[in-house]
Length: 329
Image 1: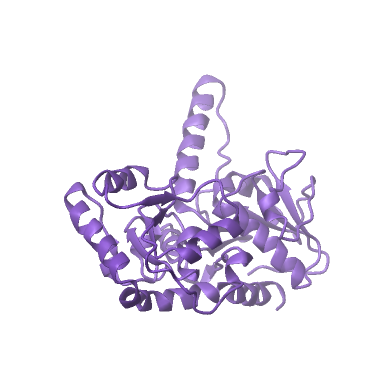
Image 2 (image 1 turned 30 degrees about the horizontal axis):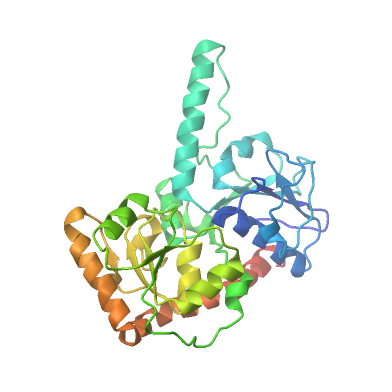
């Protein structure tokens, strides 16, 4: 497993100026390691930018470095989108953090196509990608149950996989008690960047319902909107444990979702199956009926989401405990 010493540097690779679930998880990792007293923790943004840390993440403690030394005592945290870095630093310890299985597949396919073109046109290029080879200094973190299955399917033993899950933005954790709802508020929240085709069909087939996209808002604004709402609908791909699903349940929203990606697994989206649907045009009336049922009788449905809320509210503590286990043995 990972060997951390006082001489170690922990370098967290991250794309610059990106405000999505993966980069936030990487900034949370930096923040927690700093607060746990782990020294020499740095963000390394690639490609390099003058101002790389998003304003949204100013709440997280970070130091930056432009230099990465390839030494055996150093620990490089590599998101799955950057596995091409694994073989660039053969001496260092590498941790691949699987935050998005689908994003990995998309980027890997692109890089392989690009590599094949260069090989054919110019020269026989040495393979630089990482293909789950049993390298002694490469370790795996799974952010979701689904990603753990994917890693195991590629030959990584369960004993070599750590479950390391991020947590929702701290602003969502400020009110952990019951939230008072206005039961006359029948607005349906959704993320317009996810499940666009499915959501558009649901909206088209329910002109009597009011759908509200969550967009152009900071974490505090999203929290306030969710705290006033009864229902969040999600039919996105959900390559990992989705942030907005977790944020919504933290504010006592019921959820109606698809069964894409990690949402298919109870371990990742811990809600009863009656609220999950394999989307098809033929099932649209059934989905809309469930949405209306939840909106009309919210008090009867919200208790079904309490187990999921409890897990979400405990994720920050679980994250700290796991990092303590890994780095402060």
